[in-house]
Length: 133
Image (cartoon, rainbow, N blue to C red; front, side, top):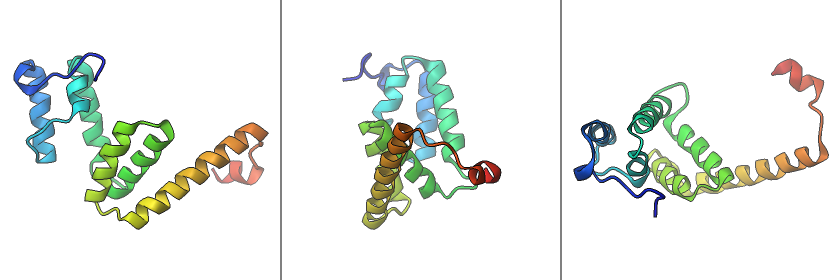
């Protein structure tokens, strides 16, 4: 259960309902997911987070599926079960196959393992990487 519970549409303030309506219209759905209902306890944060999400996850230089794959990778690394579930579904809707998912998990595992090794060994950055960065 969410720390503060969920604010359902029927009990939401007009400003929260406006955000909920935008979420449903943008996503072409008749549901608001639990993440947004939990954030609704702070209407200012709810609106800001939704606006950021629309802007960042919307059309841009990165392919929409790539954005979802990045989100899944960060969520796996941060161990956010909710975000892993939500963005895996979104990635699948944008074309992620089982093969892509398995390869993504391999890359995430390799990156996390190597990151810990670099940190543990305190490996200094090579000059060639500094120059090209």
